[in-house]
Image (cartoon, rainbow, N blue to C red):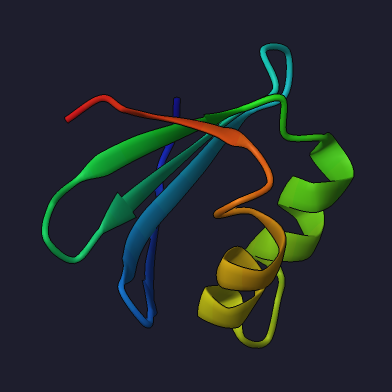
Length: 70
């Protein structure tokens, strides 16, 4: 999965696998978390949000099943 470097709040990089509907988020403490079942439209809105950190907190963090992978 290709990761896009970002500097938004505690976010450092993000990536998405459309086929598997998996979102990967790397935080400033180097944790990498996978969110399952994320629709492509949510990814599009998240990856283009003016305030990516706020979008993540409001629409992803507690809405999708998370699994720490690193």
